[in-house]
Length: 271
Image (cartoon, rainbow, N blue to C red; front, side, top):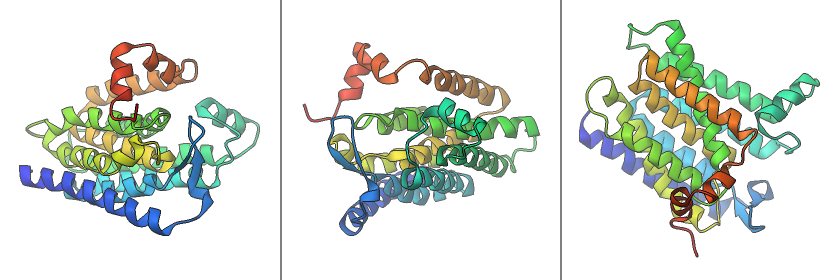
């Protein structure tokens, strides 16, 4: 995988998300794409489909798995953004509603992310005969878990975008096989994030479920393309631990009480 191809994935991702955001904001007037953020200000969720556009275009340089991850996860995220009523929050809330016989859009999204992850992992593993069905199942769970975790971080301007870029950097710098296959997906994730970063940091737009799920899924795809069984199981353990912790602990509280994390989190926002 040439450096030029990896660079192209990042540049196309950035241009794609930036242009898509400009076009969508100029043309879409539906209030269904507007939310109130943590500060009580109105923000547009059109950043989400803009990220999906840039991420999918950039990921195409690395093959089908990344494109499927972005479009599939972004599509299920959009369902929750547009049709969700917010009555059930978090994994516990959605599972609790399902136990009561209530089918929420969040529950549909959870299942959809799982199916998307499995499809992505199956596509990514076709060229790696050394991997087993167990490895593919673990890979699918990593993609779905990463999509969910990115969404949990989308609570302050720029936070989910920074997390996406930071998670992508070690994957982007990987050399050799099979890590080389992860580089275009990682580059596309960084590029798509940069393309919409200014509006997000300014507090005028946010990823929403559409963009956050897609961003996390693309990082998860790059990760499983880089790793084998033990790497996938390790990543899955970390993702599971963080997801369960989110049900008990506020990520925002932890970040704001940790000086280094607080400074990184606030970087780029208007003071």
